[in-house]
Image (cartoon, rainbow, N blue to C red; front, side, top):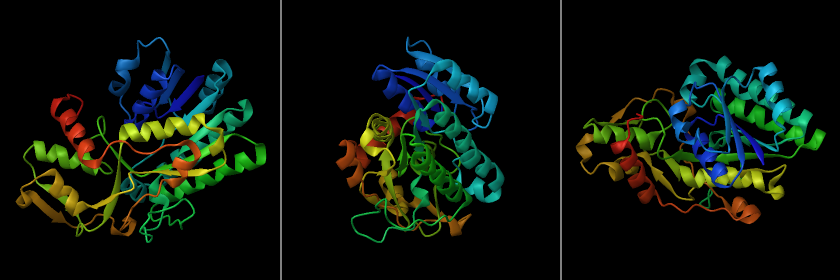
Length: 315
């Protein structure tokens, strides 16, 4: 297939591109490099099926029109977005423009050219997990940040195009993804930040009391999930979760990362109102619809990620 990946130079995007190339598709990557890095995809540039990297904005209508008209895509993985929860609270306009308006512009091109869209949403749209089996797609949502609100708005637009125009579309909600090529600074990559600080001999800082939990999904498992959701017609019009199905408190994650607990420090939460106290994924639907399940344990994933951070120059 001919496939466009928006945000394809980002952390998850580059793993999606790698999987798609491995599966034999022709790939175009559109990324403005606000979150992504061209170094993430340099290794693919000479691949015979890597067609082009375009540095550009998903809100650039003439650019999108040109790409879709010229290349005849079969499928679009829409991963391009503002992804920082704290930034969305400080600057909600940029997040709304990128995550909602940007998604609308991509949707319009998919509608005009009848291209299936896989929309990358987030587990941050959910309220806290209350069921011991984890959060299901039918559980309550709670937009506790403009990031979550923008993603929910975009989800609703994607579903409206499925119903109004019969556009093949799927919404995916991966839980907290980590692994090689994730940035080791800023917000959102707690595993990468902890490991980097560990290797640099710095303290591991925990926001709040550290009892909040995360369901941590290794990036190659996540990429497999993203890719497979695009291949399967059984998920059109659906919202689907992916996670490890196991949660861990930030306190326990810090202890798993560094054995010396004196290096763990608690600091005041920057935006406590956006914190989800318990995140635990139920991925039964992905298993049922297209036989996806995670393969990499948390311990193995952390080991792989630490080795990458230790040996890379891309930090």
